[in-house]
Length: 200
Ligand code: GRF
Image (cartoon, helix red, strand yellow):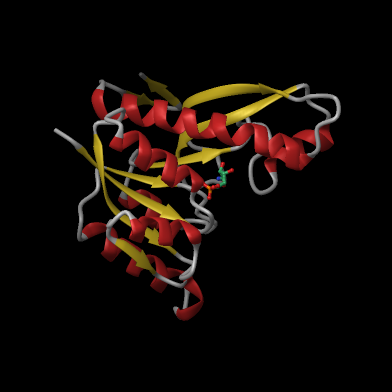
């Protein structure tokens, strides 16, 4: 049976587009049941509309508090009962009560090898620290910042003349492939979470 995916995004949506393309190619046994953005005019949301997907803007700036905005996001999600909620450049911190409502069902992609360089500007953090290898991480979301159980990681070499921008650009296609590979597994093969370990 096809898994139902919801996608939450805030920006250009390249990870969303890459996941949607992989589903169309039959690489992930899933369907995207909704795309939600906290930014109303974002390219990712436009791309979702262009594909005929249920695309919803819930502009956090128009809600009276984080909790009220999250309640609206939860309503929109619960209307379509997703199996997995994929964060794809969703730039809002989720409260513990939101995370607790979907245990081991919210997934994020982060452009570093966690637990190194959590939070924003991970490629810049990697350059500033002088690491020779970085990469990307697909992980379940818990109440911390990029701290949840790790599903899949891929490494990328840092080149001597890399800038934060060139590194981020080289990471992006690797992120896309890692997210696809992780979702392909989660949607069609057995997996379980044992403490911090995701057993694929
Ligand atoms: C990606 O680099 C992802 O790792 C990070 O935010 C960025 C989103 O890019 N969480 P896009 O909107 O999917 O193109």
